[in-house]
Length: 606
Image (cartoon, rainbow, N blue to C red; front, side):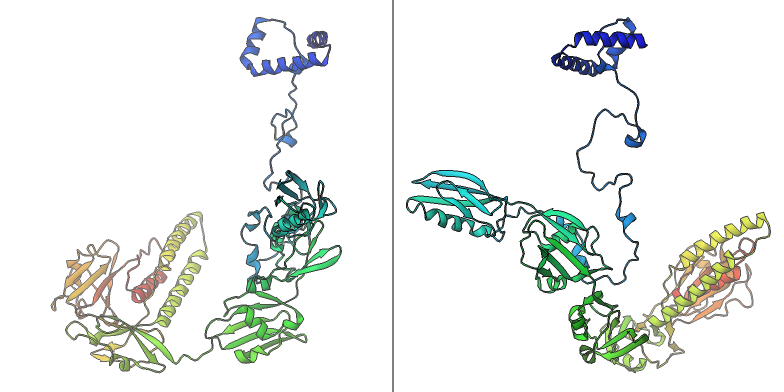
């Protein structure tokens, strides 16, 4: 092999005596490589010993840690990495402290949401100030013809033959035409027309420092705003940076200060044209006050020491309508501090850094709404005074005696529905604890427990989806209780009906015409009878007015206790599912929850 390589090298050396020959060899090698592997294979099979160039000798060694095992043939990528980091390169996760999300972010933090920094402008607006390096086109015609593109030099001048230097630095782009034309007219006074226009603007390099996410040096246009450069740097650090004092320094002196609060409120930003070397300095955050709720702007607000007043906070926070009181919590002289003031008293109150403020609607509710549903002919809402009772409202409910059953009125109350929901939730939690914490004595018992836990988990998930109605029974034996009404109560007036509803664990849930001689067993038989999962010992009967009673069917033959419940038109007969004690040990708890759900929501959960 060494001899073959030496022979090839000698042949190549004999042929390549000049740079032109070497270039020709390179071209021949590239053509042979593009010919494919088939030509090389046929050449090897024929045993020919044609001339071989060193350019055809490629090594197989690669560095996997650099190119992930791919062949390195002098290729490289000149495109942007698109945010991809190199091995060992610092990232924001490695150099920036991990911080918890703020429940109330800083006011004006949404200024750094979105990608407005990618909306680039060319800087050619009327207010742009001419800077060194800008290119300006000049045309003169008439007695003198001249056309050229000139560059603003380091002294801020442009040079025009026969005119001389003209100082244009810091001249607004909208005024450069009139200013340069006036200078030219001083030399060419007659029969010369002039047109001057700014072609390109020179980018500037601005430094951003202070509590920002990515401080450093950034390029932009001189006409770009402070917001643009801050967004390029990742925005202000919410925990450490100030939104109220952002200084622009030039040659070590502050030339402008931005207040982002004022920008949000009034749209005010410094009227500034940036120059190379300018520094945007974000100052440390000042005194902060947190507004928890009760305001349209529930944020963390930053104030200067002379601004820590209730009036200033109210101006920025903008309390909701009907707010009349303010709660303040903080620390004074090393001790816990709290105050509860009216909104007027709060205006003159002095705040301290770290205070937490809550705006409260503390008006006494003296008038509230009552809803009317069901079979009625009047309005569906009535506004009543606090302390109004049911019978006072019923006097204003318009009904048709022929189709409205006023003797079986009931209430739907939100507080009762919430209480029913809490009772069911406590029962479900107790059921989960009893199943998941039950002791296991053997492997077989463990398998049974696991299956039981899965069944209970499915049952609990379905039970939590049920929404209680919050039904309040207020009528019985043609009498209506004169109960005190609560805000948003719903008075339900049932309609006159001749039907009995049968549901739950029956073969054909349906409505059957009322028969005064029929019992629960008869109605269940008319609904197709029980399913295999039915509990025939306790049949739920929900009266039209919301009362709940139980009936039972002992078996195939009639029992002496069967049919004790006297059904009436509009009643619901619900057959609950039975729970097999052989397959599930928590039968008692599940049965209790099934009853609670059936009563609270008029449904049978299987």
